[in-house]
Image 1 (cartoon, rainbow, N blue to C red):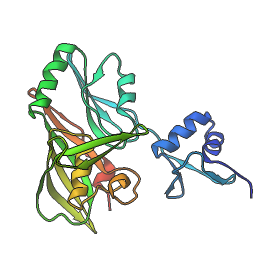
Image 2 (tube, rainbow, N blue to C red; image 1 turned 90 degrees about the vertical axis):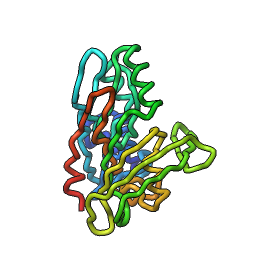
Image 3 (cartoon, helix red, strand yellow; image 1 turned 60 degrees about the horizontal axis):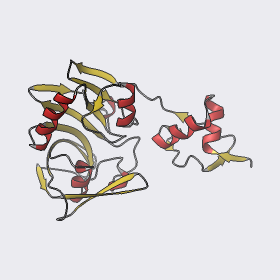
Image 4 (cartoon, rainbow, N blue to C red; image 1 turned 120 degrees about the horizontal axis):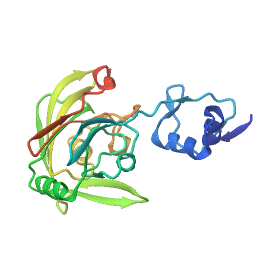
Length: 244
């Protein structure tokens, strides 16, 4: 049986460069049947047919002289959004597989004003998530978080030595053994929602790093942000509404 590295076969099938094919696999966009290809350099049968998901474009939600707000698609890094919308710079970040409201600023004066709002916990941040298990009543988690970085990858934990972090979770819909919830976060530490949900045994579906089952994506979406009297909303994604 003839075999070849997965990214080389994807490049041939799609008519793209090897580096583009590797990037697509690393993002989680390449499937064989319903199974995600996880290792770009993994060897696979040369006759394998791949299904490659299309990478969506960021859509501008709002723009004025101070701020640019986009609806970030999943599988795209926040840094890539920043490069696309230069000279605006990121005010905050979303994880690659988290979609929704992402804010960039266009001048230093507004950036400093906005950062003060974040530091004073005066920015309202609401997310939608599908989580493991049945959450039957609201849960509040007020637990400090520490973050370590290894090989350019962040991993966070609940720890009394960490920085303050508070999250509120409200159940919305139960389907089988999972629950769609609303999340409101205070402070906004790295991976805060993901870590706090794992702490209460309700890991996000698709978030394998923090105990969730495999899924096409991490089922976390930044739905609404209020900052300095402005409100920005990213509609709930189709896959969240129809998730079974």
